[in-house]
Length: 535
Image (tube, rainbow, N blue to C red; front, side):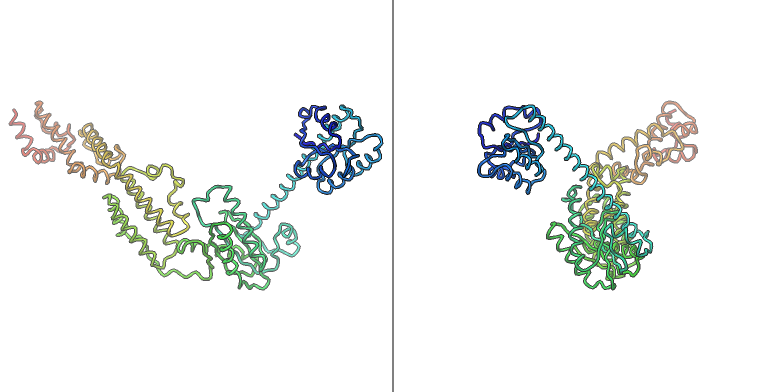
């Protein structure tokens, strides 16, 4: 609906006009009325009409003066003059002011309706044209922004080439003005927060972050910004003389401003300065290395590559002895011992001067040990974390941003895995024992029957199956298999079978002598003597 304002000093004319046309059917609504130009001017801001029907001859402020003043503040509203014959000369002046049309009084309803429909079509056409123009401007702006991001990311990846002065002209059009300078790269990364995972929120936050960073930087250095392939803000800084003395101070100010204005924290990595355009990618890689110090020292800090100390420890953190101890605690199900082991392990490596890569390696090795523990119990990480958003645990560890994050996640992962396995252990163990016994009762006559076959059938790791069976029954699977075979052999002898070799073969022994030794050990008597006793 298009809004209409009626401006006329005659009350009854205004009322008649409001009921004379099917306004809604025409696509209009009466949004207000005024009895003179001064009153109408006050209503303009409140009503924001699309169309104003205005009389020329009014007290206080006539129609011509009203249109002139209204046009100073609003060029979009369309004016339709309602004029008597004696005011025709004023109506012509109004048209010169940009009034759409005039309709003579007394009003011809068909003429007024036709004029309104023409105005409606004009407004619609103008608005469509504005939308198309705005869309074209937006597309052009976005296209330039995409081109700029592509160019700058190419530089970061080492795809930039030496450029002559003339080749800088199109880059200047993109807002890239770094010709003939020394360079240094800064990477600014938002620290993780579970409360800020909404995509729209992050998009706005990153845009504001870039605005803050570039405003702080541009007062001292030439600067262009983009986002790299991991959505981190990258600033390429230019200096005509290669002096970047204030840079770390500015980065610290960026960090403080982000914390104050956005309510979140960032970590900033600074690459070293470089003298050539082609070396921008080197400074970028140095900035990323500096940024990784967040893993050891925590976020909300500024790290310069030049100040990174060389690590002093080269040996592995997760030794064979440590691995065996952790695995033993997990198998036993001792939560307190496991937690104590984890606390001691992480405390020890905190006080050592180790690199982030070694910490990540230790984390991956601990996770692999936990996965081994789950495999022994015929479980997987998917069984433990069915709603897990990072199914690739190794990659998840590598994406950790702080040492605390790694420690907390590993502790939670291991304890949850232990709880999952041991809370199901009793029921699962009973079921597995029954499955093993059932399988043996059906296949004991196969002389090539192996424990590996049984483990495969019950879907359990060989070593873990032997451990579970022994713990639940107090004897080994081989002992149980031997017992079953001897019991079945005794049954055959009791049923009248007298040939020892035949019985041995039927219960899974190819060697009758070995069968006799097993029979005697189980029954306390040789098979031949047993047969003679029952004959």
